[in-house]
Image (cartoon, rainbow over all chains, first blue to last red; front, side, top):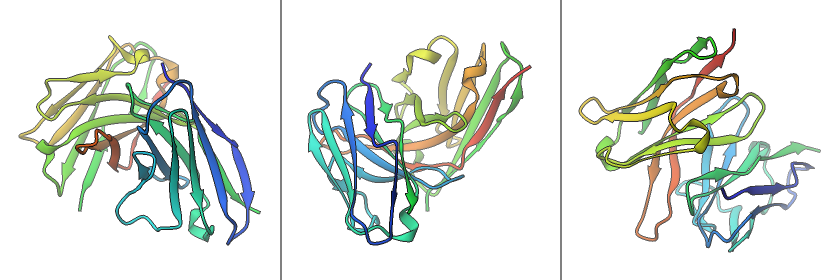
Length: 106
Length: 122
């Protein structure tokens, strides 16, 4: 199985901050990597697919990069509605998710 | 607008069975792979199973193989998850979702239901 490890597990940030979340795969997954946002009590929402493609309707402050084993989700200027948990997912073979990164208000 | 409505969750004893259903509205059901993803209380997301548009291909996470069966009824625009031999560790919110795919081979979980809670406890 391919393991996905996110870091950090949680972070505190202020509105307007630039936030970076990292996801590492236990083996190369090319660019078969997606990012989701989940607010408390809600279903996840797709943000980024194919490591760097922005899902339709998602604000451009969200961006993704990486290939192989190391990936990054960046929020360029954190907004109040962005405080949530972010999870990566590999779809290279079967599917696995990272454990999630909780973004909290500082 | 895509809408997915899950039902069938509840409290079940260890070793018991439960069948989840998911009704799809507002999209061409036959065009999509479908998936079940679960989330244990306070934990991360876990993929459970996928099914192809015509039901000819099915894939499962190792921990549910032989116990869970994914199926679909395209005429009814419905997705199902039959869960047998349930264990405490199967306790989770179960989400039904559509799987988008494009020519680049990028699969992603695009539209999600609201989830249904399954609790396995005596």
